[in-house]
Length: 405
Image (cartoon, rainbow, N blue to C red; front, side, top):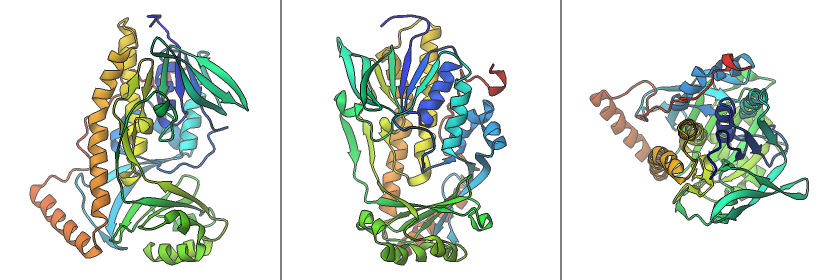
């Protein structure tokens, strides 16, 4: 490809990975065009807890303080694990505190900051349909915007459009999948009339035989509830009496009457098919995959958002290293990005599949397992505060907000 100093980068998907990558490239003078199929950022997201492994760069760039100032981030949020309603259990890594963010608010802030630069463009309502290749390299995308098909050209394409990316199949990459015995019904409740009733952190309750309920507040005084259990959860979502019967007993007693009063036909719900997969290779000539588009994560542990951000930091580091060194943005650079990020993605996916198998055990077995685990952790004295054993990923080319025009 051309070794022009400022190649045109096209990012597919204006989610956390795409917009964080755009911010790092744009603020270093690289022209970026982002394609987003939705009409705006005001859509509901699921995981919104930024964990310590991804939090450092956001704090260093001044992004987290800006989000807190705007009221779209809640700092110092703890994630807690329970067997049943009340028994809190220890996990490797000890107490973990992160920040709950409004993803819509986060993305809007990144868009505004990128928009201060003339070489940035975001096209809402634009779907990437398929790639256009010349001599085996992706050189353009066929797109659709408001019913009209178009073509977007670029020097480098990065797909951050998530698990439903159609470009994975289009370029013929094989997918390695792991069977996970779980799906999720996601429910959202408006608690603006009684925000004091919201949980203070992210609470995970396990009830044995695959029944798990996750509760967490949002910056908009809403409660999100993720309910997982064996059976037809797609059908359960549509059966309000049965949903009430199954869900309500899994909620903490103090929260149960509030949810019971709010759970009706108007409640926002979503069915999520849980998938754990990854591409056998994260790139083809001219096109790189990041985030869930490269490695689809289970919602277990809320890792999807955090890995997407860490992918973007690593990708920006290697891309800008190459550009500063006068190197082409070719497969050798893509290989470095994948080599850095794949081990962590694989490790977390393996952990997620073990967790899914573990929660299928009867609850008395879960009690026993966590009793033994607690003893081991106390004896080994390896309980740290919030560490997960991951090597830090620094945003080496990150430009602090305070230095932007």
